[in-house]
Image 1 (cartoon, rainbow, N blue to C red):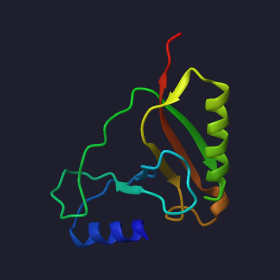
Image 2 (image 1 turned 45 degrees about the vertical axis):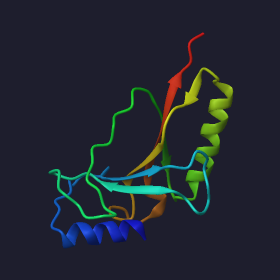
Image 3 (image 1 turned 180 degrees about the vertical axis):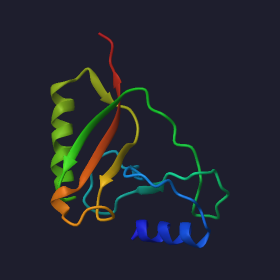
Length: 132
């Protein structure tokens, strides 16, 4: 629903979005993976910075120095397993600590694939490397 709402706002306000496969980004504000009641921000990359009316914003997303990433093929139902796998990886690699909001970038989704088995989603989770 959020994507549809954002897309309608972009069209109505003639905001030029970049035409590339990785243009839909979701930022998750919850510290743990949740199945429902998710605190999420959805984003498009735009050609030019524009003024937006509340609740919409146009902003620069801050860069992250170190990011743990995983590519997930197939249905969005596969994302839960990917987050569980990441949690296990953190447990097995204690020198890495989560350090910020996770992001999802859909490289291939319903907008450019007919078969959900061909979807490709990148999960990015900022990490800090502990000294010692």
